Figure 1 (tube, rainbow, N blue to C red):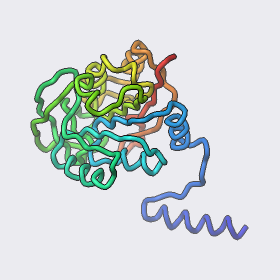
Figure 2: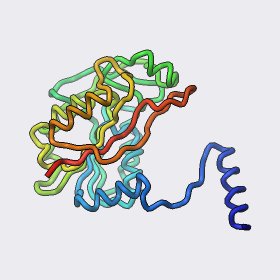
Figure 3: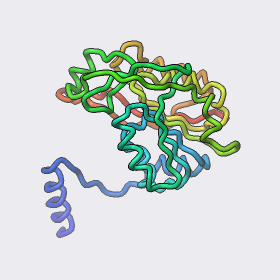
Figure 4: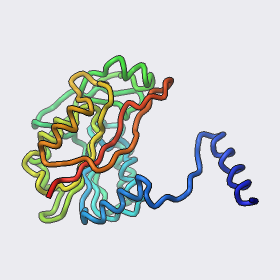
Length: 242
């Protein structure tokens, strides 16, 4: 009884400053991902759209000790990413974006940085998250993943391709067509409503990824409407069929 009261007091205190306390769950999203990385013997994670490096940090907290290669074309975000990766001998930061062509493109820079995209933002996104509105553009170097893959990945080492590119996910995968046999695991940001002009919604993206030989195996809520609480985006995990 005393333990329950103590947990209640601690949880209320954490809630008051915007945090929560949850018990350890061996079947949580984190635990499931850790088991999947281990089961597939993932040796390299390609973190596409790394921004400031939060996902790389998350992987290390998860216990992943393999190679991480984080791609981020925004100069300010890359500066912070590279500082985060600097103390980790198995974490490399690369200042480029990935797409379906080797080219240079303008990227729209969002006020919150994470919502920056090569695609125009739609009103639905701006209403759901006003802090995501664009405030300028920068030029970015883009490469096809299958043109640079061998620069960062060793032959025979299974790769996890995580893509968080705000509507540009299909372009990244199209540019990876030549190396998908080496990628047993892919994570994509999937939108339940269209948030970027030319971006996919979840039904179209999942259906197309199935044609590439992958099936969805897990998901995690990612972005909610600021006022209405409606789910707008999820991160979905796909595994390559045998």
